Length: 137
Ligand code: HEC
Image (cartoon, rainbow, N blue to C red; front, top):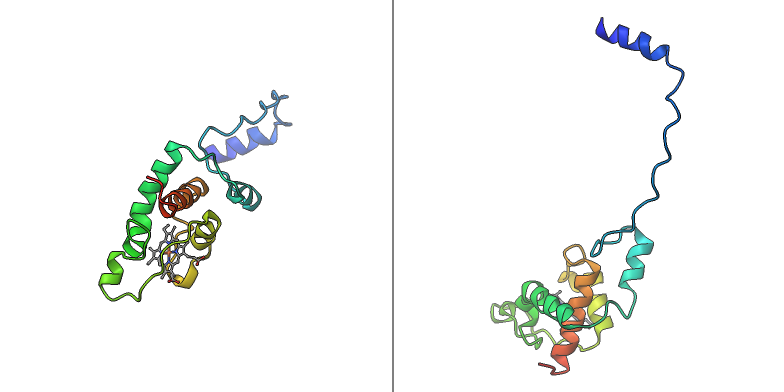
């Protein structure tokens, strides 16, 4: 019954009164992750975010979580999996482009990492590996 009354009331309505225009969309908040293929491609394109202490620290932290089991803390391929029977792993290349590609492409099935690391984190890891393999402190 209540529904019927509501329906009759709505039927008598001839549209909403003119509503104010919505405000223009706000710019994305700092640190937000871009969505959509084009936006992703943009943030993944070289040279990536500026290399500073914060980026390198973030990279070292993510590397410790996602890469050390196989590549080892020094990137020499002496991670714990090798001591447990994984075939030897070559030392990491210093080239950040190769790290970015290896994270994106799930090379040899060993890298299902693209959904664990957002674009900034991927660059952070790639820059950490670059510094590590160039012998920077
Ligand atoms: C489950 C083990 C495993 C994990 C975890 C892992 N990798 Fe690898 N990665 C490998 C293996 C195996 C290879 C092939 C090495 C070889 O050819 O000797 C490889 C190769 C690479 C290469 C070389 C690609 C090239 O161009 O030749 C890079 C760079 C790399 N990994 C980066 C990373 C980074 C960065 C992470 C962490 C975000 C990571 N890997 C995590 C196993 C792993």
